[in-house]
Length: 116
Image 1 (cartoon, rainbow, N blue to C red):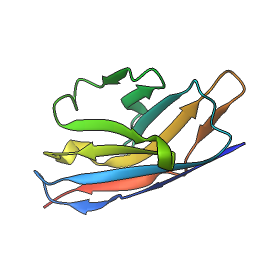
Image 2 (image 1 turned 90 degrees about the horizontal axis):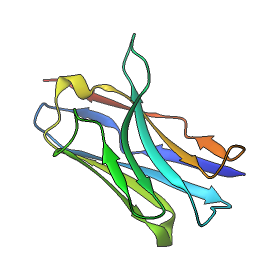
Image 3 (image 1 turned 120 degrees about the vertical axis):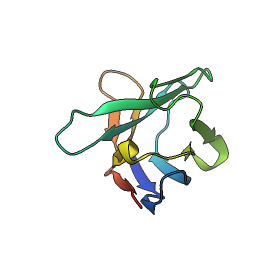
Image 4 (image 1 turned 135 degrees about the horizontal axis):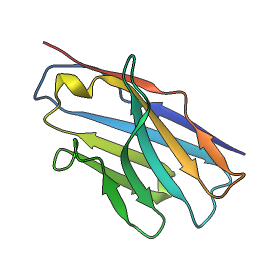
């Protein structure tokens, strides 16, 4: 069993920055995929950024060049550094870890609001 706890959300002005954290506790396998998703009101959940245990990363086109996903393995924590934030980045952000078909876990989500 794995628990994921997100933090770091909040209200920020357009052009500002936030860093989200996702702390994982429990049994983390050596092979995993960590993903940040977001869901805006009235919209489907979408992939924002992904990081694998092989250090492969990919990003949604809408955030490329602005967001960076990284991991501190010693702390079992994944980060999402978000720069140059736009109002359209407003959403609830969720982290997910997938270690196989029966090992898929989600955090509770953290709200990010970009508004002046």
